[in-house]
Length: 466
Image (cartoon, rainbow, N blue to C red):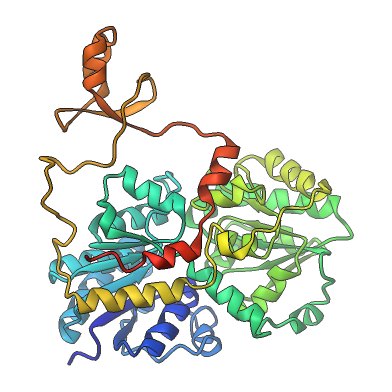
């Protein structure tokens, strides 16, 4: 029944948005594909409207898992079962998924069970917070993938540090950059939404909260109290909060909804279309988020307060746009917000051709690579190459000081650094050792590292399979 050699699997609103440029370019390049929608997000306002706005095709297969399983473990089990059957049904050559959702990790696992190569987009993104389900999902997907598309240089570095073979990684940029630039260039952003909600540009704050770990009773209550306090301190500033259905349910369950609605300058909005939401984001003075819109806010040049201790988009922090605050620390949220609002410093604009998140051509790069991978008929096991190494290892370096070393090698075999601790005085032994290090770099170092010459990236893009 095969429709196309590339099977694209997705199932949430963010995936629909970020996949759009890839699908557009596959169509332009004449690459046939099968589009499978898992239905992980089943609410019409969160999914269907984005298909219409982004001109996405009707899925060739709708799995409907969100309608039948709401508990995570049941949903993932059902996803694996149905995606496995669907891959067999359409007999795709390669399977592609993007991001860090349950659908993504389930697709990766399903590809193994039918011996099909899996391609992961947004590979290498790391928060290093294993309490986040998204972090687990992205690590699973990267570990299983045969080929990995990384959006940033730091993502590439993360993959290499984890021992991923370099020839299975390509830097492509973020497709979120593509869709945002497309919307800006083609005047698709619905500026009229400001009039609908009686908002003045740069006189309101946008809030988004939806991550599972931030919806626990303690964390959500603390966040709500902080938003109420901020609203009292900023009586002349509106706080606009498009509420995710799951977040709304939790606010109701915990009796927190009335605390927000009691404040005259806090507006709780229903979920909206992508171009309407971009208008809110584009004209906001500040964005408070638990991570969902960091990339888009950064691209639009917005100041961001992220309710997380760490982020998978460190570029936004390195360049001064994003402040991380502990969502369980009331004072940190309030004071961090007030400090950012009181800053008069203008943030430097990133030239598009070296922007760390991409130049608007990620979808084109991904589509070209998918086409090439089909043409070369890659199989599982592609990542293994016969070299003179007797053990596959990341790139390594000689170190004169080993205090920060996390993994060391002797005769190309990996050994724990602790084995050598007592031999530190033996200079000969130290010279023979090779170590992998994750050391601290200065902000100035990182600013230089994260910039990308995208023209040069394109020159070498298709050297993946030679």
